[in-house]
Image 1 (cartoon, helix red, strand yellow):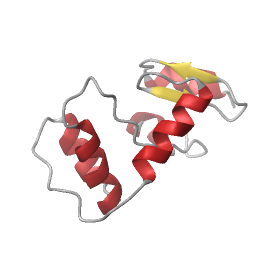
Image 2: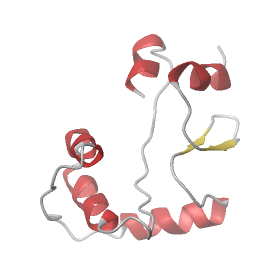
Image 3: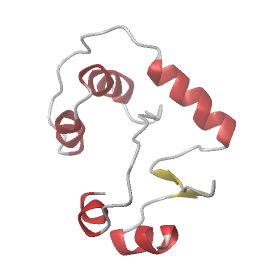
Length: 102
């Protein structure tokens, strides 16, 4: 995402936390990230660092799960493009830029 944004200032990412049940503790990590609104915590989670406990009571994660199910998204990562297409799975920066176009 960072590389895409560096190359294309007109592309933005809206991150929705969607913890999968197969990832132990992912729901609590997602809540901590959402409560703090912290990209740093998201990066820490990817680096497998321990995250603090969530400091708020939020239903955002449950709402994200319902939205993903409604849209037929059952894995991460998933991209929803401006034209409504849903792309599942990892994409490198150049592929994402190609999907979005100019």
